[in-house]
Image 1: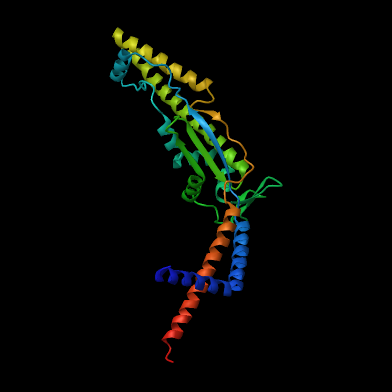
Image 2: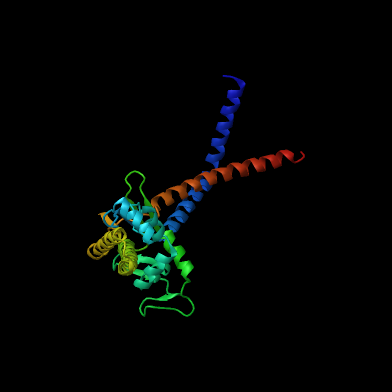
Length: 303
């Protein structure tokens, strides 16, 4: 065995002896770390996630001929052209402030659940609210404690995750909340309001087009333009028919949202394990540093 190997062996033995000599200190540090980690873990609020998989439906009506499209441009009417991918527009809409405002206007209980919910009672299936800002019994906000719209919107964005799968083209949406029930309900509300919004927008657009085309037919004498106008009237009537008969106008469930029983976070056992491990390593480091600092001070002292 070389001299360097002997030195390394002696160093390892010395380290082990130092650690073993302070085993009680290390043990106490580990126990304290474990207790602190456990206390911290159980104090954390459980969050539950609900998700859904949806198909983006294009209900823009039947396509028209290229000649009708040309006449439409001459008439100043937007017929939409060929089917377009609405996925990007839909994702941007769901994430927008204007859409969140629609959610708040049509559903009174969304605002307190987004901003004032602090925990969930699994036995009673009831949300526990922050009593300092919201009185759940009377359904009122305390004086000057109602959150601002932008604050509420930021909370909404943090609990929402929505995007289009690059592999399938389907829309994935998930909501994380202290209440597994509200997480599911919010997804269902978002889907319902999205369908209603896009349906309403298409109906209003086709109504404006029909009003314009009706006026055009009353004043236009050229046969080819009147024929194009009749085709555009038919297309817009088809749009209104689709808007009236389809409940799943823009979004259709492939995999519905559910109330999940298992929390999504935090991982409390992992917190306890990591906290105990960090305490163990920190205690060893403390013991070694303290030993060598004291040792160096003794060496520097004059004999």
